[in-house]
Image (cartoon, rainbow, N blue to C red):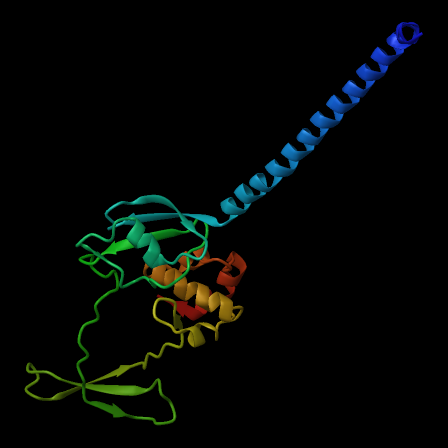
Length: 227
């Protein structure tokens, strides 16, 4: 009797076992696939975070290893100089703020300490005897010049008193720069930082190279500035 029942239901038992086996296999591989996805996601996120914490900076001039370097976000000029092997004996960092934090894609130039300053050296001032003919008019001044050829006689000449109210973009302080039309504190600081990084301006038009100084602002203040 038992053998008869077994033979009768044998096909059904095989089918049920196959179904159970397939269900188990499907569940097993599905769980593994979800586990792999969960494990890989944090790795990609970490890599993305690491990339955003790096900046690229170019250093050139009197440096032992000039080139482009990657540094951690928040690094300063001193960190970059150290990474590039330090400055040469002919270099100087007098024009740089070593504590200044670097920004992405910035350029640092190490200058030669033997390079002559491009500023014109003024001749020593020679005091002359003058006689003021009209105190109410500053432009009316009689200059008395003594000449050996005239045997000590006075030679009166009329000259105009030259005064300049222009702001020097190479030497002015932040407060002086802020007296210019359209130049606030942020733009004044940007001008000073540009001078520290690249040296003095060689012509007035170079002021437009400073971030935030447009052609319109330059045209508004060009008559009130000097080198």
